[in-house]
Every structure is written in C-alpha cells, then in structure tokens.
Image (cartoon, rainbow, N blue to C red):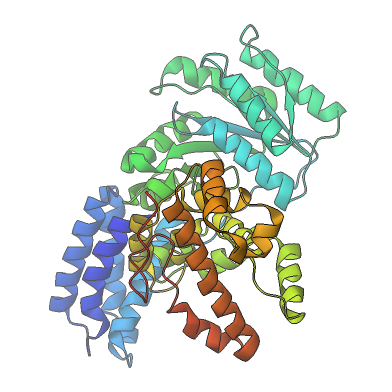
Length: 462
C-alpha cells in the first residue's frame, strides 16, 4: 500500500535523519524532494502547499534547533503533519441513535459500493455485534441487487429483497419499515452509481436521504483515482450532507494521493479503508497508523488487532497443548498455520505492518505467488489423515496420488515436505530452548516463494 510514495519519501527523509543541525538550505533541498514525491503520488496541489509550508515553519522553530537529534525531530514533524492532513484521529460511525441506524452508501459506478456495503455489514455484525439488514436501491446496473443478496448470504446477514421494477424511493421506505418492525440495529442501503456525477443521480440520492434521514452518509471512492477521488468527494459533499468517506482498493494503490487529499479537500473524515478483495478486508482508518506505514515505520497496532480478530485461538491453544505433551508438528498443524497466515494477508501482508520491513514486504509480494498458500493447503488436503500425521509414509505411489488429487506436481509436494521438516526442526528448538532458539532457526527456513531466505530459498510455485 502506497509503496511508491513510501520509497520516495524514505529516500528523501533519510538524508535528514543524521543531520547535526537543520538549516534553511538543507531543509529546502529535502522539502523540494518531498514536494516532487507528493506530486508523483497525485496529491492535490493545495494539500502539498500547506503540508510543505507547515513542515518548514515547524522545522525551523526553536524546539527543533535545540533538539539533541534534529533529524529525528524533523521526521516526527513530518509524521505529525501527515496525520493532520489525513484527519489526526479515527472517527467512528455514529450508531448511538434509536435503532435502526441508517447508513446510506453513495459513490460513482465502479468505486466498490456494493462490496463495501457487505464488508461494512460483516464488520458491524462481527466486531460490534449488531443485527444488520442490507438492501439495494440500485435498479439500473444489471445484477446489482443479486450481487448484494449473494454477499449478504455469504456473510449470513439478512437481506431485504428488491427488484428493478420498483422505484428507489419505494425500496427505501419499505426497507426502513421492515428494519423498524423487525428490530434491526443497522440498515445499510446501497444506492446506484453513475459513470459521472449528473443531476438525475444527485436528485435521486437526495430524495433517498430525505426519506431515510441516515445517521451516516458514506461516500465510497476508489483510492486508485488519486486526487480525482478528492474532487469527486468535493462534488458529492456539495449535494449531500456527507458524514464520511470510505477509500476502496487501497491495497492496490501505490501512490496514496487520495488518502492525503480527501480530508483536506472535503473536510469530511475518512472512516474506513478497503485493503483487499476478501469480505473481511475493511479496516477503520487511523491517520497515525497510515502515516507510520507511509514513512516505513510499520503498523504494529493494526497487526495486533488482526491477530486478535482473525487467528483461531482454539487451534493455537490446541497446538500449544500438543507441544507440551511432547508430540511432533505434523502436516495438519502445518495446514492450520498456512490458513492462519492467509487470514493475516500472507507473508507480504504481515511484513508490510512491521517497522522497517517495507522493502521486505515489497520483495515478498514480488516473490511469493498469491495462490501459494491455497496450493500448499490443497496438497495437504489431498493426503489421508494418516499421511498428514506421519509424512514419512509418503512414498512414490502416494506422491502420485496426492499430486493428481491436488492438481500439482511431485516437485511441489517435495518442496512442501522439505519446508515441513524445517518447520519441525524450528518447533523442536522452541520446546528445547524457547523463543530465542526459534528465532535463530528462522534463518534456516526459506520462505515459501523463495528469494528472501537464509539458505538460498526455494523456487516459487509457478
């Protein structure tokens, strides 16, 4: 996420980190490079100007000049100003109203409104324990209603049926009545998008707003459109009383222009950020965490929260008990660990949130096949329970059966078995000498995709 911006800023700011003192000359040189980095990231010009002026003013102040480490003080100012540009702090949904709390989703076609509506419903259901009702008033896009209904079924959230013969205003009225009479906590209404902002679209969504009186009116914008996302948000804000913005497709955005422009241009907070295609890939937007990631400082808090929400604690406890009894780490345990890693976004997804691991994350994303974990899991699932518990049984004929059943080849299976043996060695070190020996053992384990390891690496699955 925002890889290009991170690389450019890191290169520019590194020059300042070791300075014994800050002068107007060396500061101007660095800020000129920062300006170019922000322009390349497609950040809106007014945002860049305010950011540069504010950083320069504070960096030449007395507190920095008298600091024991002016370079670090300068980095702290840059981080603080990035946070201010994006909103300073996370702003949560206002659900403290008499139920149902209505959330109206607005935005252009293709921004990801429908998927985001389902992601938000899933988040409110699982994290906030809310009873959520989803419905769609998009009668124009073919299969838009069916898409949201399918997503609602997938996440086990109730869906209020509608069809293309109805008027959007009638759908809104009926859905609201249904939500009230059936005691739903939250009603999320997906609206129609257009390829561009037009009068008819604005009139229709304004009518829906008047009927529903939503507590939250969220604008869904595509992060990959850069400062155009901020312009779209500004136009919507002029026609609707927006309460916040959701940035989608941020995981594919290497620039970061939208994240740094939307709040400044519209005055509306970014409340959520979409970080992947999976239904769980919607995170609250924390400016301080995003600023840390942009500057290559990692995002440990988000990683900890992901682990708490996504890691299966029962499986972790079961594995710990198994080790205490002296049992070995078998392929069923290995499969469970692969599944847990996949939930956390894989190797690259985890490295991206670790301090000073930005380059490793980029290297990981280049070398690790996106389907790697699924392929390895498929191989293990093609084995019998006995083979998973006793991998030494897997001989020539068994290997042929397993690879045919998983759609892979013998080389893939041999790599997997080799990695499992190395994992076993590491787990034995944990039992023998604790975490320190385990960390020493990590250097012996090549990454699944190769290219980042201590012993040459295993060729990637292709």
